[in-house]
Image 1 (cartoon, rainbow, N blue to C red):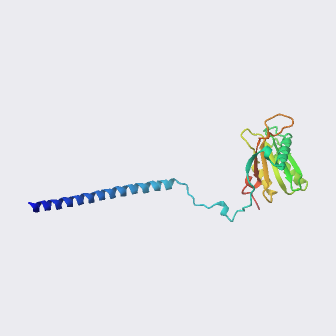
Image 2: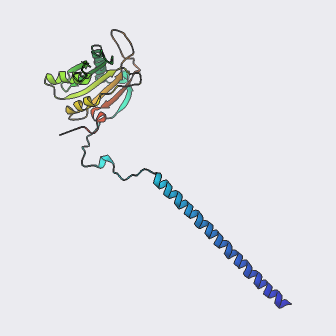
Length: 220
């Protein structure tokens, strides 16, 4: 009788061992299934991610990398004398804009390296193409008087959505006469019909630059 009990105990131990082995195999199968599902999810995530096979533009030797001035916004009252004077001159020049077709008036002012300020306004034409932007009008006045380099510029217009920056043609034109980066002050003209418009002290001004406005200019 004792011998049979010993054999029964051995059989029970073998059964326990088999059950544990089966549990391990089930666990392994479950783990394998989970791993396969995770791999499939990872492949789906990778498929949806945008490809990033390029390199930063700053590392290209095919492009120039000029030193750019800082770009920021500031209150009119906190501007330096140069910025305030140019914006006020541009605002006054805007009063002379000839814009009977769009009624969108723009004024600009550019300071030469010698300190002289040239102002301009936009001049429209019924044929569209002969018209001239305020920025080019001001710069052309200076160029026609022998100026070939400008130290700063300003552009003023009114648009309810915010700042009005130079068009693409004017950006390329400004770049032509910028051997180094040049600050450009941009402000929203006061929405007022006063004969002598003025900026409020807390008016926001965008201080940008020629190289920020046109980072990859056309060159020959």
